[in-house]
Amino acid sequence: MLKSYQMFVWILGLLLLCWAVFGSRLFAFMDNLDSRRVERLDGLRFLLAFCVVMHHYVYSYYYLHGQPWTPAVFVHNLLNLRMGVFGVTLFFMLSGYLFAQTSPVSWPHFYLKRFLRIAPIFYLSSCCCVLLALYLQRHSLVSRNMLLNLYYWFDAGITGVKPPLFGMQDARLINAGVTWTLFWEWAFYFSLPLLCFVRQKTGLLPLAMSVIFIAVYCGAPFNQQKAYFIACFAVGALARIVPETIQLPKKLCDSAIVLLLVLIFCITTGRYHIHFLPLFALLFILIALGGDIFGLLRLKAFVRLGDASYSIYLLHGIGWFCLNKVIAVHNLVLNRTQYTLVSTAVIFVLLVICTLTYQYIEKPFMALGRRKSPWLKE
Image 1 (cartoon, rainbow, N blue to C red):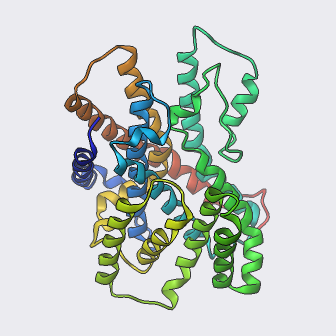
Image 2 (image 1 turned 120 degrees about the vertical axis):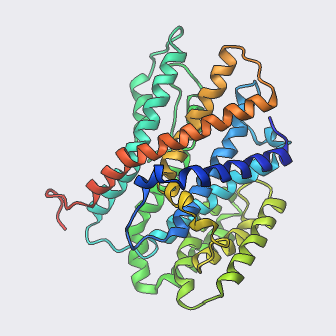
Image 3 (image 1 turned 90 degrees about the vertical axis):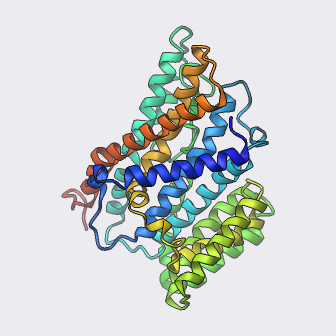
């Protein structure tokens, strides 16, 4: 496993390769001509998913080499530790930003669209986990509570529960346990009717500020992590209305974003701590104000991969799991350079697969969700 400074160089190299490969004509099929899209947010999605991928890269390596799935394994890779919190935090803020002003004509249709957006790749990820667990447990298969356990693996993330599969206690780690965030996404979606009702009475700014106040000063003393997640969605909503009253020069936004990124990756602890929320909030608000890190977030390759970010998020853990499991089962001995080269190949194969799952699974189901359902009243 590479040390921190080596990991930083490798990560930059991977991003440069992504820019060269996925910005080519070969991936022109990923281009989206929708004039309503905000390209810098699509590029941001890819970078956030990439951060989560690299975070779980370290987890998976050490876990399948006999160490526990705990933050202690990041002692020599603090950059990767912070990348996980960074990715999840801004993903939640992005959700709050996108749905802050939602006002659907039909709530049933809204939830149908959300289900068709989330469930297909979720089911693909779960199927891969179930088949891998079944194969690995084929000689010691445990059938107790099998149907109940399988139910939780196909609940589209609503419950957040991922029990053992066929006796494999750590089955949830096959896909790096990433589906826990969907529990919070669904909680946010289910709260939207109430939030929309309150928003109509008070306005978005008072609502967002009130939620942040309650989360930080009332919730955090009892449960730091839950309060942090709730505040993230509210910060996203706040960022939606800030540009209506504040405008800053783009160069100033970009310069401040770079400074904040340096601070976040130097001083944060890699935990969901409410004390660091202002740094992330200011960063996201600057992006909402038009910052794109001097054009980085608008690179064609990153915008294309941003569309596939959900597939990348749900499938990358399976790639890392298979890589390390094959090495462990066959007792392969790879030096640091060889392992890094193999990992580079795996991540690029994974990204290519994810562009295809977006094109042929995610995109058709999203189009289906946009259609008017004859059995749902508008």
